Image (cartoon, rainbow, N blue to C red; front, side, top):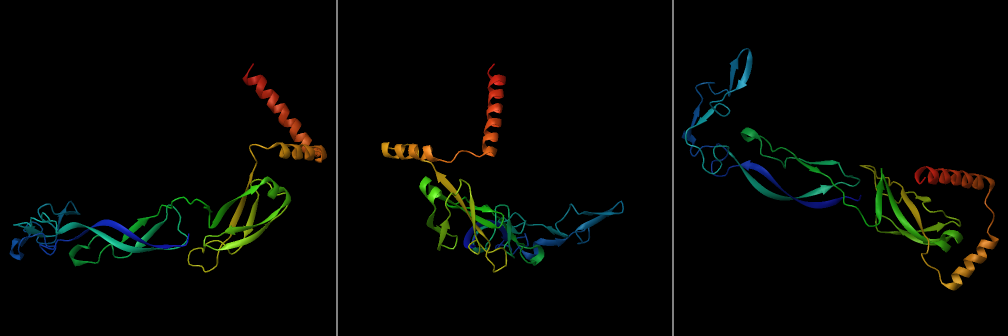
Length: 243
């Protein structure tokens, strides 16, 4: 989300230091191919094919034993890479000129990093936005409260939880999310409330809940209709599945 400097260990092909990338023990062990005349290709049936008698037009009579005439050897390298902010799993980051050595003294190729983002204990992603799940007690959800919520930059922000907050209800915190790409503007952080229903109650709590149940407003006609419909579906399921 925020970006990081990350040490990356990888293998790449580099020029053989023993033969300076020629593939031959000595300079005089390199001869021009008589078949292709040093071009590295032969003409056949109006098409060009790579010459099978040489490598890039050169025949090596006494190959380098370190690289077996390839001119390349593998080396393990560790470099510090800048992972930009806002990357997600599946993104690719290109590190310029850190790949395999180029042919005939050309520039190195590029190193490509395939990004895999590990899950976080608190934060998750939805597109460019960050989601943080905040637990609420039953009384906090019913009566409302004030909480301090962490953001990805490490700061705490005070939010006002309204009375009657429902499980899964969301609140938007503008400007508290990560930056998107090269933009300096911060995205939205989404607060998702998770209402924790107590698994057990003591005697006093039970009495208070029972008192609340006696004065709790009756369900609306819309809610009652949905309840009746669900009861019919449940009755049908029982008769169909268990008959």
